[in-house]
Amino acid sequence: MNYFDVALSVSSMKGYDNRNAAHLRSTLDVEETVNLPASALGSHFNDAVREPQVCHR
Picture 1 (cartoon, rainbow, N blue to C red):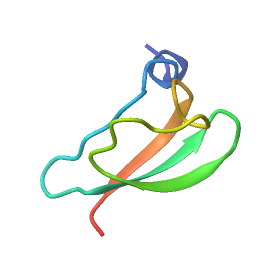
Picture 2: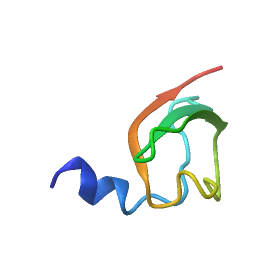
Picture 3: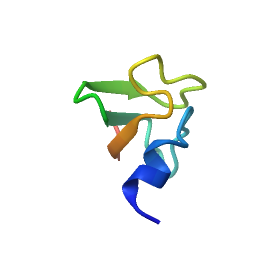
């Protein structure tokens, strides 16, 4: 599996171990930090997530 397999499959996210945010970069080179859980990632990130960084804020 490569990152394209993952990028084209992500439409929602939830955190673990008190992680409540994720910094996302899309395949369109858009960056944003979202609160978790996120039931919908929005038009820039739906099935287009690459390099997610889950964190605690």
